[in-house]
Image 1: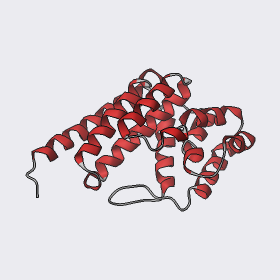
Image 2: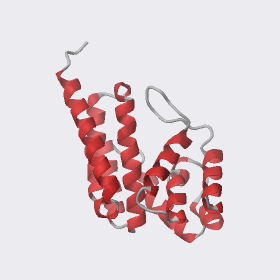
Image 3: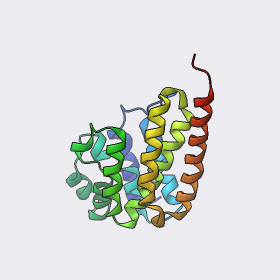
Image 4: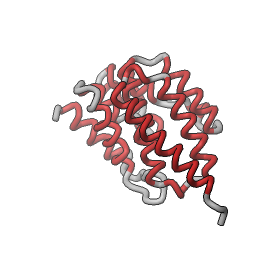
Length: 185
C-alpha cells in the first residue's frame, strides 16, 4: 500500500472515529469508507483516486476542510473530494431534491469523481438492503430513485460498478415491492 493510501486511511479513521453508519446494526463509519475505496479499486489502481474514495465524506461530515486535504494529499485528491462533497445549502432538502442536485453536480465532474460516486451509491444501496427495516418504505423508494439518478450521470466512468449498482438497485426495488405486499401490522 502506498504511503498516500496509508495516510488517507489513518486520517479517515481519526476524523470519523466517533461516527457510525445508520441502520439496524450500526458499524464504525470507516467501514463504509473502506468499502467505497475497495469498490473504487475494482475500476482503478490509481492511489489518488482510491485515497479520494477513502476521504470522500471527510469535508461533508467532519471539521476538516478541502485546504487541509490539499495540503496533506495534493490537489488531485482534494479536487475529487470537492466534487464529492455536498454543498451545505442542500443538506436539509428532501431526499429527491438533494439527490437531483447531486446528480447535476456529478454530471460535470471528472470521471474519477464519477467512479467514486458510483461506488458510494452502490455501498449505500447495499447498506439499505442490510438495514431494510430501519427506514420506511417511502424513504427507501425516494432514496433508490435518487441514487439511480446520480448513477445515471456516472455510468460511463464506472461500467463495472454501474452493473453492480443495477443489481443492488434491482434487489432493493424487489424488497420494496415485497414489503408493500405484506399486510400492515
